[in-house]
Length: 290
Image (tube, rainbow, N blue to C red; front, side):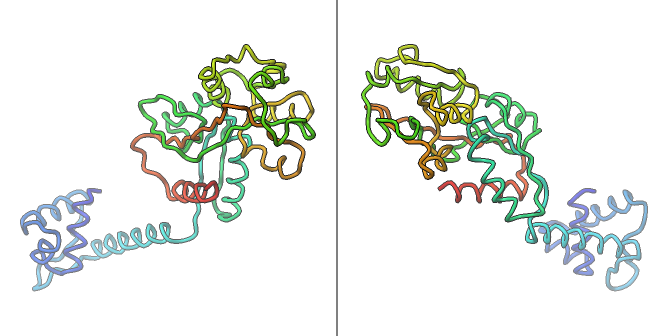
């Protein structure tokens, strides 16, 4: 139904007067009368009894008014009551394979009536799904280009060189020449972390092909597993290995001249009204990652 017609109808019922309803709505009395007539024609019934000194709702009008009030009450309860609903969220392989599952688990535990569905894929695929509105939110390593998707920084992610426990350079700094001799595990071409490292090295006059690359693996988790297995060192998100650092199973080596970091991006469909579940999750995740 037309919201203006309903607003005029409710105002007349509450004020028992067309003129007072018009004053409340800031319109003329004829405009209110026109809205009421149009509403009655639409529902096919008289909604207001105009025969007495006061305007009163008919039986049909009273049912409509009570229905509108109940709808407003239900919407108010939904906005203020226990959080519930479904969160369709996507993530690129970096945040989706390490950071996000933990945060989503904590969020769902805090709000047990929320159902979370996480899709993990490459950045391009996630952005495309958001643009088609198949996903409500996306967490990706770099801001893409899509007319129907907006991006904003979500959290700052330090990129470090992870080395096996007991590595001679763990907790120390190596030169670029020492890095060239170090057996390395790289993530696949197109991965955000690989792009960042490539750009940083180029500024120092070094290319990835100058390094001693032993393995190229698709996922951040695969690169982490390779380092844990003693197969080399890898550039990786620090957040992804916080547990390993605390357990002493991995270490970090610094490289002279390299201080790589990135802003992980929050992606949304342009113009889409965000659900309360999505709003609450974004707030929760920002606080958790601060």
